[in-house]
Length: 40
Image (cartoon, rainbow, N blue to C red; front, side, top):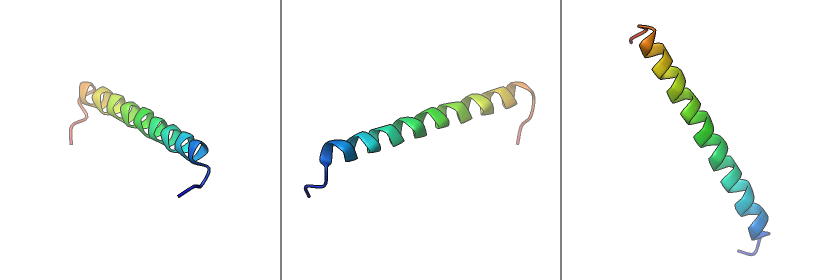
């Protein structure tokens, strides 16, 4: 269980942040597409 915990945690949270930011960007794009009348 003792595998450089702090570093591992940092990596995990960084990945989480990147995922969240990319997800919010995708949401924004979807919203823009909707406003442009591109409905699926």
